[in-house]
Every structure is written in structure tokens, then in C-alpha cells.
Length: 284
Length: 284
Image (cartoon, rainbow over all chains, first blue to last red; front, top):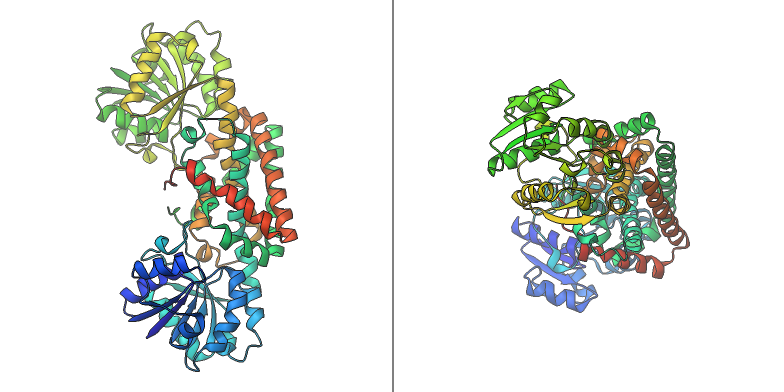
């Protein structure tokens, strides 16, 4: 199986590593709009060759589109234009509604599978690519009914190779849930870091007294602005709803702190403790 | 050196383990208001004996007070009452101003050292105690000038045994910084979990699509309400200031998302990326 990876960052590079090691593919063509990234991925052995977009696409059996979501909106129609009749295109964007709408009427829509693997780290670029990034994680596939059976079968085989668990969902529904589960946590972390950097601007010991709690809350604020700016833009309505719900909760918490209401504060934190049941242990 | 540990949870238990292993002490007396905790700590070999408070204190050379901060306010004066003239008392509370004020005029104030080790996990109870919890971390000592030279020397020896780095600070200043660096992150995490649990109440797949980003942001929400209720109460004014500053930042972020202002969103996240320079990698 010949693979093309469009976008050679953390996700594209990590996919290439595992799919090659596990014999899903024996030859990988890469494309990256940033020629430094392309060269780096080639030097790291992540891809076997670098080709222009159209050529990379037309020579591959499976094309993975692993670029920021605004770029997917632009590039995915071009990819579908150049794709062979038996090839399959899969995108890995963190938003799905806008992307699915963009290609809904495309003549080759059936060859495309809309996917979102719930996996990543705060690092970016080809050198951030790691093995086993996807192992045992969940991948959401949207609008399955608009993909051909063959395309879904190929995509499922790819995700099985990565030992991912599949969930099927409507694109609109996907974006609402992800606003709360992923985009809100990122907004929270970005805003928290800026608050603390501003408030503690003149405090030289900030580095020394920042413990593991601070580190947990600020990890996501190390994420790539290039990736996250278009996610917040594309999912703005749902993200705003999530931030509003969150600010209401925080205001309530603040009122209880102000009133020194031990009983309700305790109850509120007990309710939060419920997360022990649903959240996996934090990863680095 | 005979040690007494008042409060046999995560902090008290972890201190006991390392201080025994590293020969700082050869005999440890424990006390816990919760008799189940006391029995568990004894069974786990964390302490050599369990004694009533006054007896535990009067038989020890060094007394560690490792209980929630509201309990420290009540118990520390009693501990100082029963302490031998040559013994040293150290508390490990996460707030310092209220505690320091409580014992400022105590006749035995000189025998007391006000400390706050920046170390912990979200787990609690004697079974959560682990070795090397404090290694290489920072410990803040407040109002050093009110402790005797001998008391400070003993405390410094203890923290050197734990390989901690010491920082000296005014108690009021401590509480202001900790509001931003530690108490705000906890408030943020508690509020976030409650927001998501409420919004996603009927979403069965919540567990499956919650990735490592969600896990990072929610780890602190697993923390003990018994420990955190009094911290928020004691440091309410500083915590409210921190939450207000944070909500302003979040409102600004929301406005940029609303306006889909890519330039300013990108800039805001670039500024957050600065945290790469100051924050250590997240711990599990």
C-alpha cells in the first residue's frame, strides 16, 4: 500500500512511523507547504520522498491530510480532485463540521473519510513525531454514510493497525462535544498562562514555586498557535458556549469563596472528584 | 532524632518514608484525628506507634504538622504548648498568613518554622504516601526571623535531607503568589470538571473521547475537598483577585474567538507559549 502524507508535523509524522513499522505501507510520499518541515521529515526517514501536492496524491493508495483545519478546508478539495478512482483520502482535523460541509458536494466525496483521532501532544513539527501516539486511543469518524464502503473499510483497517477504538458521530455533534472536551481545556490553559505571566511579571521566583499542579494546567498552553487559531475560528460558536458555561461555573465558585461557604465549596469539589471515574491518568 | 507526624496523609506519610529511609530519624510517632488513617499508617509501617496528640508531641525532637490548614490553625497552638524546650515544630500548610498570625504571639513561637513544600499529588490518605515526593522541589519558608536559629538549622537539615531547594518569603507575599500559581489552577480545574459533567451529562461517550488534554486539565479536580475547602477560605481575598484577573483574560479570549480575530488570537497563544521557558514538564 502506497501512502501519501500531506502535512509532516506531529500527527502526520507519527502516523507515518507506526504505519510503516506495522507494514500497513511500504512507501510513503510526503508533502508539506513548509519546505523546512519537508526536508526535516525526509532527513528523519519519516517519508521516502517529497513530491508536489498533486503528484503525491495521484501516486498514493491512501492519502492522509494532517494539516491545520483551515488548510484542510482549502487543500482537501484539491486532494479529492487529484485522487485516483480507487484511492482513499482521510483527514485528521480537530473540527469536522466546516470541513465536511466544504466537500459535501464534491464529486469524489465517497472516497473521503472524515476522522479525528483523540491523540496528540503539545509539541509540533516533524521532530515531535513519536511511535505509539495513537495506541489504544479513540478515533471519531464523522458522516460515515457519505463515504463509500470501500473507503470506510480501508480507513478502519488503518485505524485497527494503530489499535484505535472507533466511534461514529455526526459532524455537528462532534464539534459540540469537542468544544467542551478539548477546545475549552485549551482556551482555559492559554488564558491561565497569560493571567499568571501578567500578574507575576516581576516575581523572579515564579519558575521555582511553580509545581506540578501549575505544570498540569499549563501544558496545553504550549500548543501550536498555527494549529489552534483555525480550530477556535472554525468552532467559534460552540467554543463561546463552552466558555460562557465555564465562566458561570467559575463565578459561582468565586461567590462561594467570597462567602467562605465551606459546605457548598466542599460539595462542589466532591462533585468534581467524580472525574476520577471518567478521566484517564494525565499523560506527559 | 525522634520524629512526630501530626496528620498521616499524603504529605505526612511521604515525609515519614523518606526521612526514615535517609536516617534523619530512627523512630516515628504518629497522630491522626481519624483513627482509620492512624491504624492504616501503622499497618503500612509509616509510623512506629500511634499516640494521643500531647504525648506524640512531648516525646519528639521534631514535630511535623501535616494536616489541612484550618486544622493547623487550631492544632498548632496546642502543639506549641506541649513541645519540649529543645524541640522544633514545622507545619506544611499551603497557606501561611493565617497560620503565622495565629501563633505570632505564642510564647514558643521561636521553636516553630512555617514551611510550604511545593509538592503533592491529587491523591490523599496514608496509602497515597510515596517516596521521593519532595526530591528536587522547592520549599518556601516564611517569617524566618520569628524562628530561632536552632529551629531554622534543624528545619534546613530536614529539607536538605529531602533535597529540597529553599526560598524565604514573607507570609503575606507567599499567599498572594500561591493564589496565582497553585490555588487558581485548582479552582480552574474544579470548575472545569463541573462545567463538562453538567454539559455532557447525557453523553455516554464522554469517557471515550476525553483525551490527554482533558486529563491534564482535570487532574487537580481529583484533589481532596477536605484539604482544599480551608485553603480557599483562608486565602479567599487573594484567590478572588486571581479568579477575577483570570475571568477578564478568558473574556478577552472569548471576544477574539467571537470576532474570529486570527491575528490577535495567534498573538495571545504565542504569548502563552512563553510558559515553555518556565514550566517544568507535567508530572503524573
